[in-house]
Length: 489
Image (cartoon, rainbow, N blue to C red):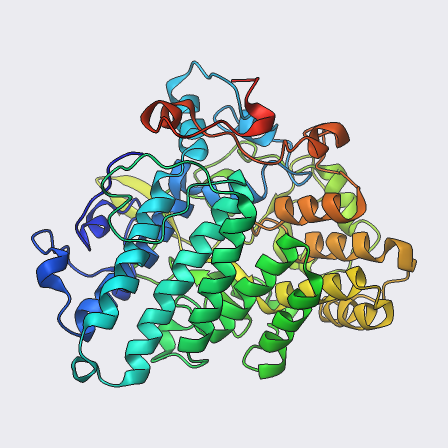
């Protein structure tokens, strides 16, 4: 495994974003080591902030689109032929790509280095924050919250990787990663069990409230931890516990729907609906590449005058929204829908910077990880899986009502799939679709990733798990290739 930095904050200096949020914008402390650094609350807070920065760096790799390249491109949402990403979109993940730019994107997507950077930072926080005296914090609550955020970040990174690769190396001690120890893959079930353990620890430590409004949704609170727990249980197929976890989020009353007439406000960040987000929307933040550069065009992105880089699958768009043309999510989050190249405008909060007579667009949108409608629909999914159909319909119809739709009228036999479709309408281009379709395939045997990307037989053989980049197999001799791809690379 690639040797990672032993320093605590220096990753801030290599952020790929145009600028950073204040709590992610601490100055690098390149001379500090674990022996001398952990002295007070500021040190602990700075170190946890570095964990968020590393997570953001991970989700923004591959031109700032990794989050969407994992969660949206390999689905029925897009049929992109954009040359850098066509093989990712078409699930040709084993390809030995000749072009340097194509190879670079595929290589980044198949590697997990940056996830382990974030995990090592979380491990360090978990190890050293408890060694700082309680009197060095403004309160014990503040200390517990920082430790809880570290447990949350470790669980989130491992869960994200488990959905991508299945079995992955599991490291819960600081130093093993940085020392480049050869580590074999741990069974996914054991990784998930560790995630659940970590999230429950985070829940016991975190508050519902934030220390200030600027941290809303972009730092983990108890609601974010319960939302993560709900998703972990859904992925595991444990819908009884998934339902319990969603109730913990919903019944607290901490989150409220954003009016669907102002739907795009969700993606500017820190809305009343946001539960956990990656901060990059404020005036002093932004991304000069990112998802907007591939999904927008003029007049929403004036530097793109031809078709958008990623092509929406118009068949899917019609299937999801065609019979409900007045769906507020459709009318507010899509544009140019009567043309052959419709676009999703969720990430269209853009400013233009003039430097050296070059106009550069900077996108100011948070990456929305969890939000209220997501958790509501996950609850509906859990209830349908538990054959509590009437209760599931009530929650499903509540979400539809927000969008201006009437009640869902399908059969109980089709309800689980109907809820997944509703998630497709509600969460289009929000990094959920691929994992939703995997759960649909596991639970109902229905495989519909679109455009022959994953057949039923290939799904059953585990094609939805990514291969590990061959370079990692050369570095770590204890690694083995993902089963489906082992004969294809």
